[in-house]
Length: 101
Image (cartoon, rainbow, N blue to C red):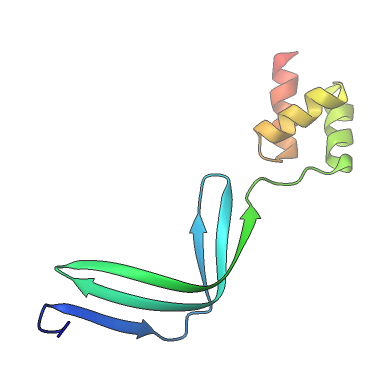
């Protein structure tokens, strides 16, 4: 009956995981079962599986903070803020702080 209405469904084989990216995190669906439904020129994907959320923001370790503090001659909070603004890029954080001084 669905075919008569122009609706086609298909199980997608070989899918291991599906990743949905947000601006600050990812939703990773492992052991994913994906069903593709086509209707009126539109495609819809139904995903079933085990979902886990991952942060995309880099974790900033103490060694990185201390290196930025030492190289840029700034306090800890300033170094941390610069590393967060540069998404953990040490060189960019140091350059940014040196430009300000």
